[in-house]
Amino acid sequence: RNQHHQLSMLFKAVFLFLTQLGLSSQKYIPTSDSSGEEEAESQTQPFASEPALCSHFPPRLAARVYLYSFVTGQQSVLLEHWLRHYNRLGIDLRRRAHIRLHTATKGSGPELEELEKSRLVLNRIAGADTFVESEAWSSELKSNLATLYLKSLPFDAMLIYADLDEFFEYRCDQLEAVLNSRTPVAIRGSMQDRVAADFRLRSVQPIVPMAEQFPQRCRILRLCLVARSSKYTLMPARDFNGTEVRFQNAHNFDCKSRNKPSNKGGNCANLTILQGPSFPHYHFTRYAQHFSETKAATYMNNSKAESKGQKKYKANKYSRETSMVYRADSETGLVQINEWCRPT
Image (cartoon, rainbow, N blue to C red; front, side):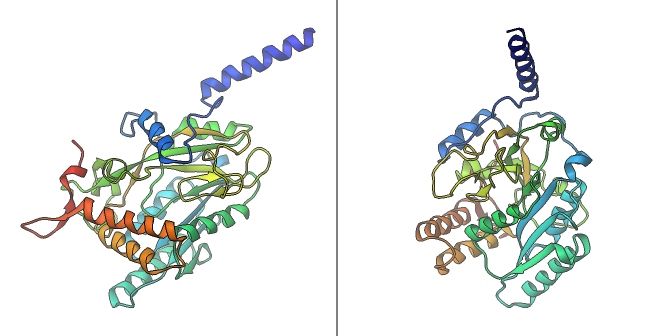
């Protein structure tokens, strides 16, 4: 009886300790429809003051972290900023990164030149063995390939699955919590759309830090396009039972069949989901309008890209971005962000 009482007190002490760390329960688990995600995001203001951000991962954690992405070959300058960002965080790009380079072009001189520049950037910063070229692209293909890559990783691996315009950031206390936890932990952050000071779609410049080039903070995806603006920024390869994680899409994962509806991450055993900091989203550059038009055309013209319903939804999504977010200045003709998508 004495022993039982002592065990009970020990478990209570451990529970209280984990509560202080923020690991005793999930901060939130968004539901399979957008309403859960909206509820979660409404509880966390993405631009509020936040605890200290880490300049790099703790070395013991960095040794377990891998990077995966499927990037366009048409944004070589952004690609260099992106690679250097994750390299500064402590990711060993030459040993623990896998990048698929989308090589499809219209065959024009400028596009071929830009593609070659992207190849050179990847070779120089990450190494030739880090990336694979692919002419095919769709969001479904991207998620399926990410799942395959995740399956190839060590049992205790953690993954960063970031698009080219996503520069994830992390709180020091949460990285320590991930490192010290005996059960799987995932971190989820909110996108902070960043645009140029004058709200025009500006080209990305080399050397100058991205935050200086695009200082305005907006919520274009969330408020203007009513699109997903939260994403897992760090996730385990497996749950507590050793079940492999599978991507439902670029924003959510599951530990069972993708055909079964469930809370995102909710059926992964003993998984804790922490609400992490907001992170810069550098989508709205000079390339943004062209990107949206290209993606809309891709989904409309390629019947194999997605299921019929998804194809129509994705095409409409990118067409809506082109028509709602951008407008040409009446005097200069330069494309800029519409007034109603700007912060007030």
